[in-house]
Image 1 (spheres, rainbow over the protein chains, first blue to last red):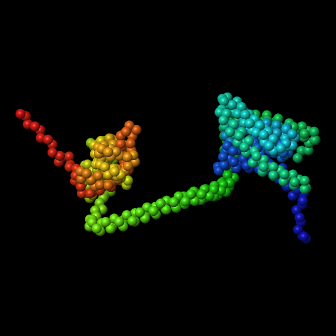
Image 2: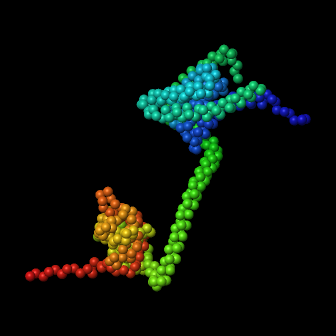
Image 3: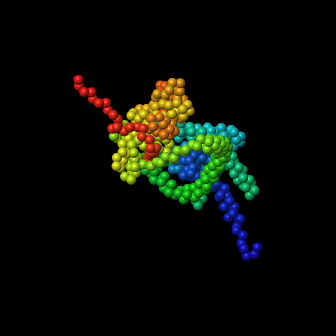
Length: 177
Length: 287
């Protein structure tokens, strides 16, 4: 190896770290955009956003800071036809609660976390419903919110399985370094 | 990058969530106050995402096509099984038909049977419904070179439609089987019993005057009868339907409500006398 300079390991390391730190937010955004695409279902978007954000808030809060949640929630509100801003408030509150309880939740079994997530989903749907009602000054039908809660609660295990694998891989990579 | 002291940074990170929630409420109010803003932002986002969607649509289409292909394969498999079964059944029928054909040929040879010639027919386009003296009649457009005779029989592609009652230079009127003035001698195909099919102006003509003891069965096929020498025997008309009130009606094979083209058959029959030929009773002279 004469005459060719190897790229500095510092750069690679930094790129690696950056990719790992950016993966949660970017993957969530890509999933949301894919769900909202012409071939997907627009109603899936909130059902995709909530599991991803809660999962990363509990297991890797450093990669899902409040500003990222804010941007993702804004993206959700723009992609869906929900009243502008309600999703942002809901997701930020959910994120705050998840981060506050994460020390307790991280040590629990998957089933318990899922049950807690169901609570999150119902709470988020309820908060969204209340905010919508306040904004419109009219009681909207409760059924769509409940459907949304059920949808995100049902989608959580699938997301948690895949994201859990990715999270373990990330941790292994971090320990190797 | 601005270097901040650690306590300040911690305070900032702790503050960021409440501040962002407050900002979120702000966006909510902003969206409420200026609905156009949200609309414009949505449009801008959709515009920006368009290339992504377009790129994503290709593999999605491919996946969807593949899934459809697989579904099609399953459907095809089922259909194959069904067709094989049907083929088997038809083969049996074919055997029956061939044997009957052979038997028929043999019988004809023995009887010196003279076969009927295939009836000639002309096709005419239906140009108007109704009009004229009758409630249920259609007008046909007839080119001048086409010879149409009163009493010819009109069929569509499924079955009996009616009879030509008036003929002009370029048009002919067909009295439909459903008209109140229509009386068609029919045969019940199963029992060979004779009956009359009487129009009611409704969609289904009624069946009347069948011989005692030969009650028409539900779903039995009705064909024309040669009685009265107005029709050849055996033209398909319809099937028997009993109403809830207990009258026998005929569900016609022909679709009289959507006639486009009818075939006019000339069987050379003149059984029905034209109205002007009917001898009217002479008015009685005063005493």
